[in-house]
Image (cartoon, rainbow, N blue to C red; front, side, top):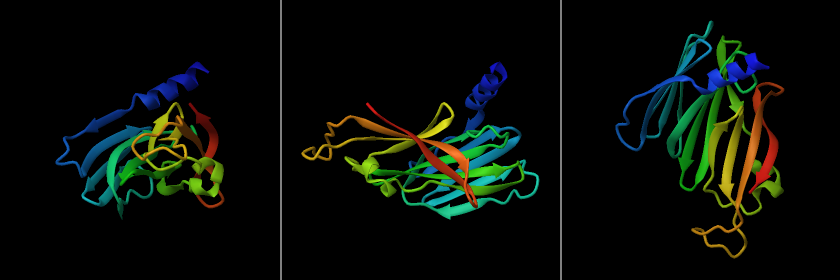
Length: 183
């Protein structure tokens, strides 16, 4: 148990370096874990993830995004010795997530996050203003809960946090809802 805690603590105290942002629409940060490195760069609406240390394919991933990158994290949520990179995006008043897993330290595959609209109980009181973060071995999505008469600037229903665990899906990795907390 102490060894697992040390591994998880080591994952939390990652070796990451950041460079200064050119402007609010730019992000440039490098993350390292388990011998794998990810450089996450944005320029305007273009996201680039550059891996290094993978045994087979270190091709960069490039995609257009709506919004701005607000942060990123590296982790090993499923504790398989191969890290994942999580990139957090804010567009208008909604948060989103782009994530990739290093498959046995060989290549990257995208991590799928099912839309929370699949479950109406999760979206009751939801009006955006959500954010994603990695906390204690899970990916969390947190947002204020609005009551019917609330204005968009003053929610009064507390907060809802959706907690996801990384699982192997049929053809790819999936963030599966594990727990819902309200406070």
